[in-house]
Image 1: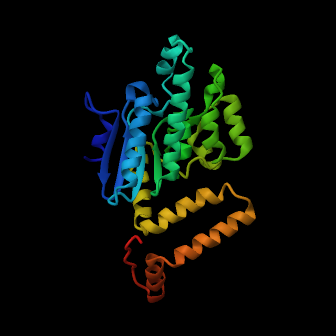
Image 2 (image 1 turned 180 degrees about the vertical axis):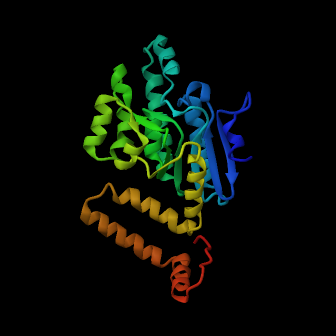
Image 3 (image 1 turned 120 degrees about the vertical axis):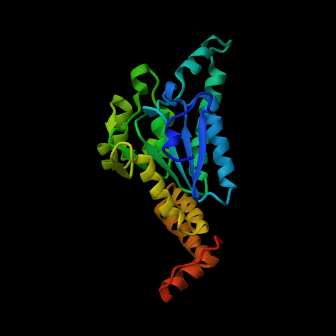
Length: 274
């Protein structure tokens, strides 16, 4: 399936599409009529695909995209509100949903392969969280980002976790406290996205970036991604101690030996991903 064809969903298609573009798995949120809101079914589908991709050696990187005008409007408020009639007023379902979504977001971080968001439209609340959870992000000029829960009496506490780990504190607090949308150019300035591209080119740009990373040793990328997120939670001394251990382990890897040898010999390395 071409990337262009993936943008025009046919009737009765699944809510999450998966296609391969070379070694890149493109996952496309496919609930355009519901603004790609993260229903419990969508959360489960995303988590299942991530688990499958983690064990698929043919996949070297992932692009997360969406069909329709919105990237994702966050949690499915209609689904959540419908459970207000439960005996516990929905408490158990709300907890189950938030925990399942949090686990799915962490699955992106823990995936041993890089994940690149391709954001074509608005990404709000848990949709903004989804972008912030990805390792890299490409945004269309038409994209915007917001954590507007405060406007409806529901502070974006879980989106806050990913957002505050991507942008400076005061910028994160401004988004969380005002709910105001942040245009793509500003999102790039504060570090929420890597690049802003012309509208309609964001998916191809994300695939191109993913393909660039896919040329590297999969073992090295896996090791580096895990180390990046782990050291970020440590003190400076602990981070250096841990990073030195990772570097030592990395130096013992076959791909590091090959890569350094290729550099010295001025040739292209041949990766074995080990």
